[in-house]
Image 1 (cartoon, rainbow, N blue to C red):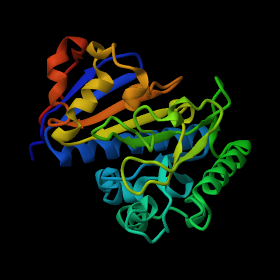
Image 2: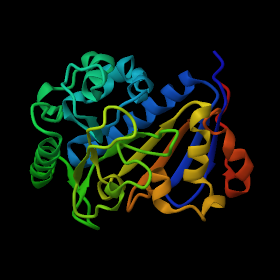
Image 3: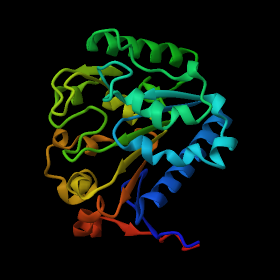
Length: 281
């Protein structure tokens, strides 16, 4: 069966861009990417600590619920967190936990005790404080790694969406939360997208991860993707496009884009070196 062509670009240091013709091809490649990071992390550390986001991201992980991954991955070593969460009940339609449970966690044998959701009975401020405390305890025993550069938690993989405005996690353009240096987890009460109250990882935690993947689909993300990646946008204020501030300290960033989300990159094509398309097989 013929696979769709994927184009891959190499850009700034430790950053790679992959562009896919179909959502199925993207899901297949994302599953393989997550699988490889999981296997490396378990082999090197004995654990795999992954932080997820909301929105359509979980649907793009669907291939992990299928063969061979549902049988071959060491799910008992997975520890699941959220890089962002809405301050709603766990059974609420807008809960990232509920979305992830319905579309992913319920279909793979990850241990319930290894799934760390926020305290939905607390205020958003208390929930952020509690979540950071939990992560700090897991860093102490190295279930979650620690960055040698800044003592932040070093998640093995953080998966992010990008919004049409360029936000990642719940870090929105020009928001004071983008400036936080010492907090690992913070909260906001003024999200421009409902619901207004959310908790989120801070940029130092995101940038300390071993691997970061940002997934974007659809033409409505094209300008945000271009602003985040292209060198021709150096004049932009840093905090106006939060995704542009995702710059791994010691890790690697991989963008997973469909053609629509990548469409505005063509205008700045000189910024990239086309490596080689993946073969048709």
